[in-house]
Image 1 (cartoon, one colour):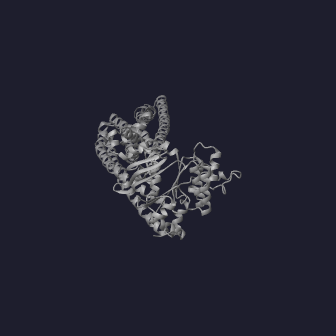
Image 2 (tube, one colour; image 1 turned 60 degrees about the horizontal axis):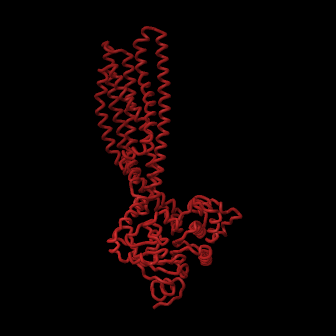
Image 3 (cartoon, one colour; image 1 turned 180 degrees about the vertical axis):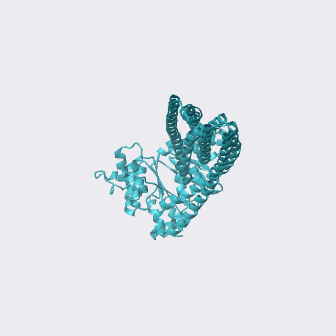
Length: 595
């Protein structure tokens, strides 16, 4: 999707309003052009005749033209601002929607700071471009063209001086624009990196202070800051050539016009009023050219930003991916099923509620994160997943929720292949707490409800089951306590309990807790697991943990190492057969049997 195509989509519904603004702007600008001509006529013809009535008449005409020029420009500018605002509001809405539907792999590819930059600074540049095009893009060319026509009517010889300068000015503007667009693109890329650094530093400011990394982060900031400033400086220096160059050329032309005009007045081939009007038109033309040069700078920024936005809008999102998967599933033939005998055999068996069947996955081609993972759970059963850091535990949760698509194998949730389910249908069945989850700047109650249509009883039941009622009590109204950004006014354990309550509130069929009790003491952790079993007995649980005590009572336990299954079974079975599980148990409890 090019910038031209992008603007056609969003500008086309507003063409009628833009045309109305164009007519109003055109009328006001024409009135501006008539004023010097009327003044010249009064000086050369009305005043010498000493005709008072004619003088009053043309003075009134000038007053009417001035009023129409003012009203026309003000009204047209207001209309332009409103239209530009509505177009960019629509564009920003679609861009935000697109970002929300981007698959996790897509977000990883773009990076969050780059997406934030497109939603903020890039959309602002597009707004500025649309607004200026409607204002300067109409007025400046009319003043330029109209001024040239008026000067040709006044004095062809003097106008020829001006016309000789036009090709030179056009070449300068073209060259500067061609060079500045890629420069502003590179500037926005540097801004992406700058935003990423600032975002990381603000989010991790406690860690920076605790580890005395302030000077180190200042040095990193200075590097990115200098890069942004340097790229902005280069782009600014390139576009800054326009105004001085055009001023120099036009002022030289103005000097030549004054000299030629003085000679023609002295020779009697021209009149004083004509020369005065010609100089006024020359000033109008000069200002129009300067406005056009500014507009080219704004267009350079706007084009670079529009291209960056269009890249995101044309990228594949989950809705398109969902349709592709569904079409692919429908196109499967009996021949392809025969080539997968394992899958066909599974279809003859009773499907488990949640299952991985020989699933492999990699974030980057050639670098597998999970290899040949298989497990199955009946409804109400619990799977505990344990392993060293980087073994692929969190990736399993991401695949279950459809955030990423497996490279091979089959995943079942709710007894159905997730490829046959819409992402919304899939995720409504799942309650999940990620390892590094987010609390929003809102009340505790709304952080648990999260905009879903839930009864208050469901929310409070989840809060109690999550062992959060000790600091969130319904009677005292503390559920309406306002949280700071990322829940900064809560302890680590309190955050985790609120997040668990959020996952439970929707009464999911599958509950995934990704290391979500690491900040809880053993007693609270035990009470939490007990409450979930009692209050949500039908939920199928997947517990990802670092502590064996959190998963030892699970119906099944999966032990991972470097993305591979090192062990699978009950606690007792793994204590007999899995060396890594034995080592983890021994390190955490000081007990266990070593072979």
